[in-house]
Length: 451
Image (cartoon, rainbow, N blue to C red; front, side, top):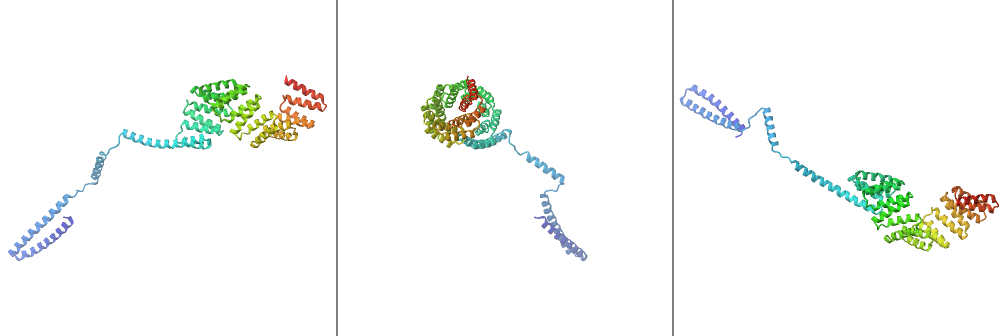
């Protein structure tokens, strides 16, 4: 029973008890025995009821929590917390390491997937010649994983866009990360070579060969560097080794053929060009070089055949038209020669050599005025071309303008003081003008230079 009800009943009974005591007091005054007896009975009943109600209240109070001081409560709460904490559990170190490994592997796999996707796009762009795009993509790949291969790819892309300083930076970083990578040294050597530092290039090719003695490409590149330095014999030795290691690389035969040609061994050069064409029948530059070599041997028909093939493979190669024009000119077919020179000028209007060649052909055809126009253009494009001045002087002489001829011969000699033909031509012009003393001086100089 709620304490409030018990309290109310107790108060009511207490009031009734007071009233009963007051009535009993009045009854005592009457001294009526029956009234007193009844009064005592009522008092007894009231006492029993009050005792019963107080007992119920006591039971309710006992069932409630007892009030305790605040300090005791705080101590009990702390004790309860300690008991609760003692029942918690935590993972073991092995479990923690396992979760870290799983999370690391998850993140790593995501980064790896992203990097490989970028790599595939970058490698595709590189293969297709889109080097600027390749640079951007490998930049992103390096941000994810700065590994040597990505630096090597970006460096190669820089090199192929003639950004050789940036290429060197990437090759240096690749070597720093992977000091035993022959490819990085080889590529850095190429970058040095493109900057004209062939000594440094050779040092890097040496290191590449040291790390990988079977790297045919390193021997090929070192051979090119030796050739640029003018050491043709050493170049051929490297090309020989490259061919020994990789006998199916057409570029090495092409390079060795070019070197044989520079040494004047045209037969050996043609032999190497034949092998290069056998391995790669669609390489226009090999046909062009072989045609040029045939021309040096005096076989202009064979030269024209090779130039025809080169033009078929690469119709926009102006220099091939120029050389075919020269071959036609050597055969005396000046009209066909002029057609080829016209085509070369159409493709490349800033090549002084083509105007010079066409001027020579027009001179041989007797078209002196047009020849002078072409020599003028050749000199405009290349003011240091002493041959153009000499030839223009010869045309002026044929036109009877000896003074203008002597001026051009003199300019040719100024540009090339050892130019025998110009001294000889000027001597003839002086003789035609009747100045035999000056003529003799020029002839003496020509003879002295020609000894």
